[in-house]
Amino acid sequence: MNWMENELEKLTQASNQRHLRDSATSPERPGHIVRGGNNLLDLASNNYLGLAGHPDIIQAICETLQVEGAGSGASRFVTGNRSVYGRLEVALASWQQAEASLVFANGYMANSGVIAALMGRGDVIFSDQYNHASIVDGALLSRAEHARYRHNDLEHLEALLHKHRDKRRKLIVTDALFSMDGDRARLHELVKLKRRYDAMLMVDEAHSGGVYGEKGEGLCHELGLHRHVDVHIGTFSKAFGIYGAYVSGNNVLIRYLMNKVRPLIYSTALPPSLLAGIMTALHLVQTEHWRRNHLRSTSEMFRYALMNAGFHVGEGDSPIVPIMVGDNERALRFSEALEAAGIAGIAIRPPTVPVGTARIRFSVSSAHTFDELRQAIVLIKKVGDQLGLLTS
Image (cartoon, rainbow, N blue to C red; front, top):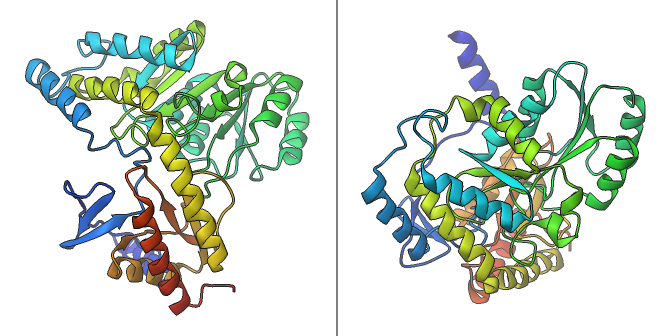
């Protein structure tokens, strides 16, 4: 196993080896976590609407746990398909204004499984360069040609579409909101290109679901484009505060996926208690509009305060606010200094982001108050100044 040691040493030399660290919730202080015995303002999680500790969700999980037990015991096609699955999928389809929906264990399995089921040899997948790893892996598993276009560069995408215009099937796939940069996909233009080149369009709303839309349906709904999206992916592990994922679309798509997606067919079904929690979260996402309103206000304040302080901050209007650092080792030092100051802000390094673009990826939650974020901004500016990261 010497080669493994050599690879690990290379990662260490590049300040790129990863280590697991324990974190715990802070029940008395929403929007905080405990690490190493210290209470930290949690600016690293994806709990955008602050629902992860909601008492109604916890109660729904506990009540169903007492009745249904800890696990489902089998795949959905054997004995794991409890009635709560059907109720949830009907509710999801109604929420998404789609004909049908299908629940998955997680977003990774949904993306990789759906793409591999839809595409194959002789087909071509057009994927934004900054798409999530699960989309990339789905393309690799499909054995279709993988044509990656430069991030949000739709001239490059159109050139690739024109080049491959005679392929059997064409799929354009994109994140709606890019998880490490916090910027939006150019969805209006993608819809036009999909029509022009007779391609399918798949949009992953993992980081925009719950956050955008009148009832949290996602960015496609907020822009009025949802009826032009062929495959709509979403997750329950971020704004919903739980775990799992879904696909929405027309009846033919969902019936096809039910019969073709290997991660769905060959995986044990989610525990019924989790599904009950998701049902409750779906209700909260649709009805507690104050969470989205508060999140938008605090995210805007946080982003522009860091920009005005002189940090190189990504563009956008989302709760994802990255401070670009560049160097891996410097990003690690920034993260360590933030933790010492009482803030959880994690260094994101390659291969999650391109080489030379290491960053601190902050994410705001509706559980954060304006006062907490203002205090955090003061500390972030102090640490950034010490590390020479301010440009003005």
